[in-house]
Length: 464
Image (cartoon, rainbow, N blue to C red; front, side, top):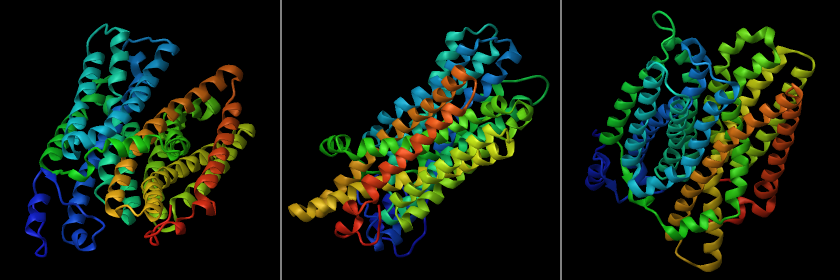
């Protein structure tokens, strides 16, 4: 793919139009960005969005297929069904850390191609499982676990894209990238039920086969049109410092409150409608609206954070999540489906905004700390900031992994609440307390004047 620009440096142009590693990448240089950088960055972003979106499509497949297994002769118990739902989440969360480190090792182009191609494996396994007669339960378990590769794509994609954009554009770029992936949940919830009912009877194999041609196209486009950045090469010292930073567990906690809630609510919302309001069970078919709205809201969180500061947006976001939870609680107590549904949609809005704002905070936190350290020690600013970008990339993977585990915890809280008392109220009260605690943590670490961005030099145009 060649992008015409008469002002582009010939060396930059050659690097931008091949699928090789790019050695010279300076997005903070306005001249470089306008000559070459923005075209290459946006091309890589859109291809990354496609691959990540397919990852979410495959990651959530079992949660949709499992409700129709009885129709094709598989009578699994509630416990067996539960493990089919939780295994993709567990494996996907666990894979997010190694997927993050794969980008520096293999390059964005190489790993995006590989991770997208791997999605063919669980699709083929699912198609075979639901087609063959008498498929054993252990094979369904294995298929569900392999679907977790789709959950790992998020962290590698976010890590890769974070290197392409300048600081003042990362919020929007990462928001778009994440939203493109997250919306895969809603797309699967909307399209797969239609696909499996095409023709006569229930054809569960269509749930897998429908994605396979698109996966092949995505893999090919990633290989031929994406780039890898030398700037994203691993730096073991920087990674060790990042993983021992006090900000890593703090941001992981906040991401549990945003993304963990998003993915947990996405899986649980259809079931919760039927459990809490059985007379309105016919509305489970529109549960995809929650995941859709939450996904669309994510880039808004990044965009607002670019202008107002990610910490401030995150703080007010948790206040909104707490208010939304109160609304859901009241809806359950007064038996109002309208209040319950509307408040849950509001929760999805704030989880989406919070996803964008928390991810926007990560690179600026490390950039701020690095600038403050350079001011004290006098070390080379350029080298230090490059190390800070690598640190932020490592933290993205850890935070993304813990956030995905949060989705499992959310569903376990609902499960235990319903089993213990037959009501959602204890679970909702626990979630309310958690959101308030996350808001307090955000204020304590990132909003107070002791961590004000004005204390860091060379960052007058940005806020954490």
